[in-house]
Length: 98
Image (cartoon, rainbow, N blue to C red; front, top):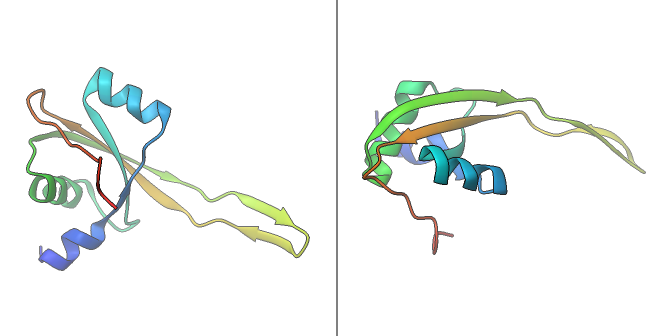
């Protein structure tokens, strides 16, 4: 897998209260990834980009919701979430990343 593919595969981390609890309790980090990405590609990308040991990857596709405003109805985009379990001695810090 090329370096360009690794950088485009993981779009952004998802940081909410629920994902913070997952991180503290189960050592899981949640990323928004490309819809065409599979678990092996996600595992390789996280291991090489963040230099951590990945134990398990679970994915789910989030369907975009329909929204309405005064101009009509539109649909938000679908995206894929990846729940990445890392080893106990590994850690990913997101402070200072733009």
